[in-house]
Image (cartoon, rainbow, N blue to C red; front, side, top):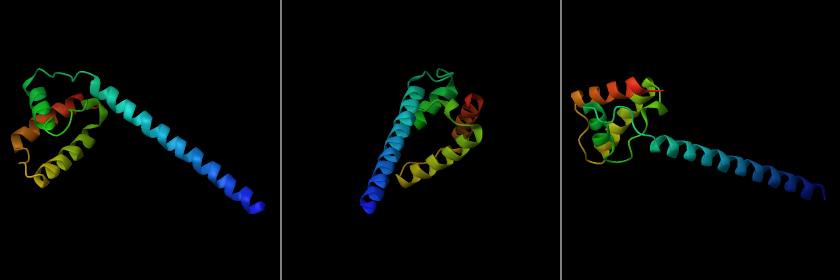
Length: 108
């Protein structure tokens, strides 16, 4: 009987944790979708158009305010590596600078 109560408590606790994880994941996805649906700042500038053109090849261009300037630097480097693995050329130095300057100027 004690063992049954113990396993029942564990199952209930696991169910609560699972629901919390799903709720957290849903909240994060909702926040990301909301951020993606906002218009990009200065989207009609050469830098904004380059950002959308290059980063939008694989995914929607994320709102620059989602990340800090340092986080954008890491993310752009990761995406360059991802592009290489997919056989696409990485950004050249000028494109990288323009895009990072744009992201830094509008970062959160």
